[in-house]
Image (cartoon, rainbow, N blue to C red):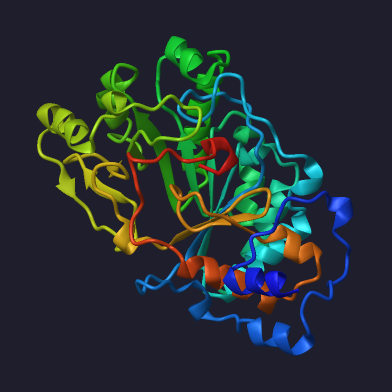
Length: 370
């Protein structure tokens, strides 16, 4: 009993159990007074850390499954998927989202795996948009099947879209995604269709890798000449199974110089204080180019992001190894206030900055959520 109480007070990271071992009622681990004492009022203080960072942005992974095998995201053999019974149901996902919104989250981004592989993704977007206080519902997708549901998603309330695309060459697309090259035309078609949907923001994520695709940087900048989209050049980050190396990671300043040597000095545009990217524009172009500098110039001091993975594990830093499971306490009958205590305890343990190039992330990116 004492050990259980200590675990709860420390943040209660549950040991792995089979779902059938988790009763659908609250266990008598703690007396009523003790549970009431630990319960956390759900307000902005839940998501405030020891460095006075207020977290208002939650990324939710809808699934670990993906229809691509991108080299920087997962190992060639794929990853072992979590059994379905250990993943959040739609009701559990929305309950968790509602708690975070009540605690001050203003923006939720749906990720994966590939979020469009989840059959109820449109209903999830619609339910999120109905939550009072939530201002933006965004999605990161590889675009492979997005064209089928894009109109429904925008009707349901999707406001922002990021498309992952790292090459404009069919042969290279096949090499990088380990999937047929015909998929490239689908993604390019989604870009045009998304612009027609009048979304608040459309971004293209390009992971720059030396010796792989850095020779296409200028081609991607050209996309912003006549299209009001944002192309983001992302420094390659280390994750389990992606064979990261410092020699292949191109610092953003090198990428930026390549662009300016060709197009002239980039014009800085307004940056949000919590933004992960440095935003610029080529003079006379409709769109923007940005640089996500996670490896060479971290933005940890203004970080306002949290992550909830498909298996219910809650992560306060992309590079951090510590996680707190929120799914099991939900299934054990914990109240929202008691779960808020677990969330707050984990947020309080968030470090000032990540270890970056020192420690590789213990999960492959596909199981965290892009």
